[in-house]
Length: 73
Image 1: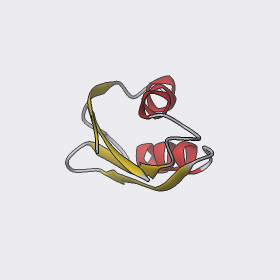
Image 2: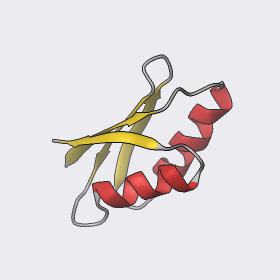
Image 3: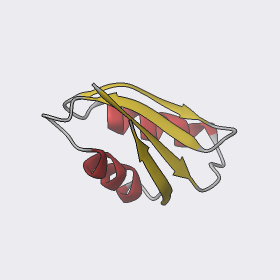
C-alpha cells in the first residue's frame, strides 16, 4: 500500500470532510481516507495496482476542491 497526502486550499465546512472522505472511500483500492480539516490535508492509503495518486487527486478536484500539492510515499 502506498500513501498519499493532498494539500488542499482551506476547507470551510464539516460537510467538505464527509464529501471528500465519502468519494475516496467509495473508490476501489482506497483504504482509510482521512481529511484533516484544520491543516487542509487529505491522507489516504491506496493500492497502486488498482488506483493511482493522480486519479485520487482528480476525484478530489472534480468535487470542487483544488489540490495545491501531492506527496506520495
